[in-house]
Image 1 (spheres, rainbow, N blue to C red):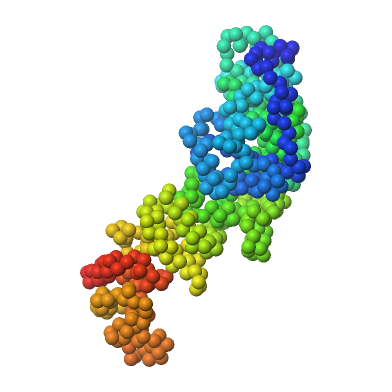
Image 2 (image 1 turned 90 degrees about the horizontal axis):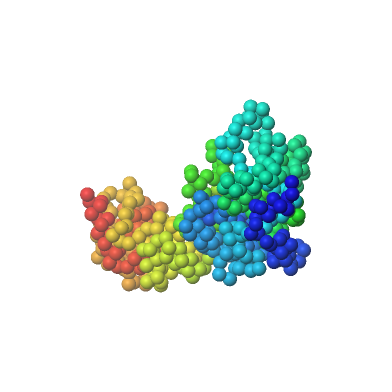
Amino acid sequence: MDYEKLAELIFPDIKGTVEDLEQRFPERDLPAEAKVTRFAPSPTGYMHIGGLYAAMISRKLARQSGGVFYLRIEDTDKKREVEDGVSEIINALKKFGLEFDEGPFAGGETVYAPYKQSERKEIYQICVKALMKKGLAYPCFETAEELDAIRKRQEEAKVDIGYYGEYAAARNLTYEEIEANIKAGMPYVVRLKSPGTPGQYIRYTDPIRGNIDMPENIMDVVLLKSDGIPTYHFAHAVDDHFMRTNLVIRGDEWLASYPLHKQLFELCGFEPPEYVHISPIMKAEGNGKRKLSKRKDPEAAVGFYLEEGYPSESVLEYLMTIANSNYEEWHAAHPDKAMDDFVLSLSKMPVSGALFDMIKLNDVSKEMISSFTTEQCYEKILVWAKEYNQKLYQFAAARKDDFIKTIELWKMAGSKARKDVAKWSDLTEMFGYLYVPEGELELDYEIDEKYSSSQMAEIIREYQKDMFLDSDNWFGQMKEMGEKLGYCPNVKEYKKHPEGFRGSITDVCTVVRVAVTGKKNSPDLFTIMSVIGKDRTEARLKRFLEQIQE
Ligand code: GLU
């Protein structure tokens, strides 16, 4: 077979050469240790938390080595693509502060562009044409039914399933047969003619998993589909070579493809990058664990964390503790340092599935939020609420001073710092009495059984006369009011002589607290009332009275 002639028959319009591409996409001028990494999602609009994890690790390894982290869109599968899928991914990563050095966005285009596979068709075809000229690729006209028949034969013979060796009939087509098929308009794919030997093993050394022996690739995989678009495997080899990636960090579902990828690089004459296969993020279930599933687990989607209002810093820090278990120790030893100062080590990454624990994330996030200043919280809440909670946003934007007071309330800056809030949606969940508009506020009163309705009503009626909101000694006034009703103003004294009183100042405050907030426990009650204002406080007292008298 004259392979030159075959290549011209199949690719008459492709004039460029691999050498041209080598010049067009020169090696990067970077120090030897610099890592060029990438995030290569398909534009399905859905981003899995595992994708964020991989992106964070890839970016970190590039950054800490003075390299480059870029975004490549793997849009060769048009069926799975959704509108705005690309911008959704870029926006999600931006919200987590994971910006790219290069990619398909304004300011991100460099000599290595285009960064979308759908715009690189000619580049792939140049490379396939070069393989065909070397007799390493051929057109295959087999129909789905014919491929099915091959599969059946293989199943019966109990041999490997696939298009290879003696089963790859299209390997033996003559030039004339191919030409006739093409003239007849028969659709075809272009396959690799794999030089792999059955039973031959190759050794792969993964920085996380160590040595793995795997059978060499023997399959004549599809390089170009019938529309001339490459398969993922081939596009990966071409793109990572010409974008000069030297470290590929990807999910371990790709581990089994390593022998094929290695072979593709070698046959194309490209130096393979270093590969790292990271374990998936798992969820505990029963006594075991399983992969976080897009279908079953809302927390599998990155959008979940954004909607719930987890600060991006919390999610990234938690993912970092999963990536390197020594991160926590480092963080405790260097509380003033930023996560960017931590050196991530591949050898310390988990080998089997990394467990994602929501409780742990919440703890990390509570710590994180408590380390933010009030002003930082305000800014972050504003950004979150603008997108996910309009009513909270309106309050925060229109009444900044009051809003700041609410933050100080639950942070309790100055005295004992509280660590209640893990995510911004907790604000309306836990402190609805501060944040939910009056008409929509449902107060589920936590009434202590030790108080009778008439006793509570008496306290509230008395309190309604003057709520002391203008006083600079609210608590003193409350004590006086309580004393008039027979409640001891001094808790210690009350404990010594409970028989002499109806209760203590604590009981008086608890009843008012429940009336105003619905809860037995809350941050400083006076501040809560100052923030919600006189009218709303009065309305709540009235509502409470109606409730307990029903
Ligand atoms: N587009 C592939 C995916 O979404 C990327 C795999 C890789 O990083 O090489 O799974």
